[in-house]
Image (cartoon, rainbow, N blue to C red; front, side, top):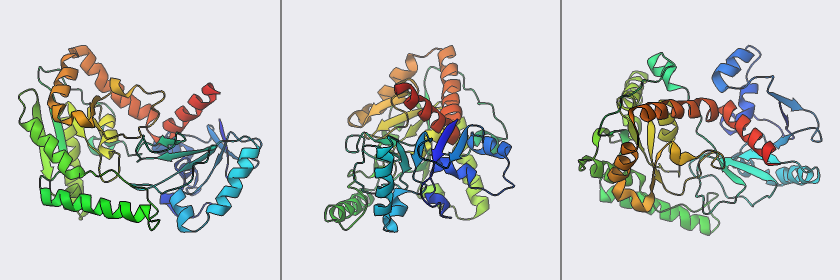
Length: 354
């Protein structure tokens, strides 16, 4: 059982509440069975204690973004000093595509979706994007749609991509302006890589379409989520998105505005194999998960050889190992990359390390 001490107020701003506290911040009619089904953790596995001394972890209940926006960092630092006296690790997190700039606190673990692994402190850890299980939600099933092995890999993608150099220039221009503001201390977010994600996606899709080494299954969108605003349209385009994955072996996963990919986790949840373009991403549990066994790993500087990389990976598989990888990827997401499983795995790995 994880014992958490929460020293500060939890405010009714759900987006900013530390993920592990969210299952326990619902009303009295939210049963433990609902908690297990929705979050993968029960009251028997986590308890909030009244004393820092008896806790396993001290938890900052709100995001760093919240504390900075409300000028509460000094209050937080008082807690951090107290935790350091008691030799307690503090768990915290950031939200958003970019996070915020904070000092490096040695006894504080900062979970975040985005970040450049070369630039962030070692105390900053990758956080999965927690998504709803697409199999029961979209397909009314909890069984992976297994794909049979074929000589050529089928690579899927459904989403926003743009080959316009003008659009790419605008995207990079916005990043430059934010970076300058950040360096001048006018912006809370750290500097970002100069990458037009929609252009990179489009260039890779075109390269794959021009290759005879793979079969492509692409749906291009001009806008995010096809610009859908009406519930019926969103439902239809979401089904098309996951149907595209279901009908593919591999799925191209490239960062968005922030240096992470939601599609990466959606692909694993569907039991498919991500084609992961590494832009120095901060992947979750990288100290215990051998990610290169689960994905086609393509270094950013090797992205123009993406078709060859997929073909090399695919050709090493057999009918049986291809089937097993689909099941393994689904299991990895189901057991380890949902909220409860992720934090339980993190806690067990840190206790073993000590």
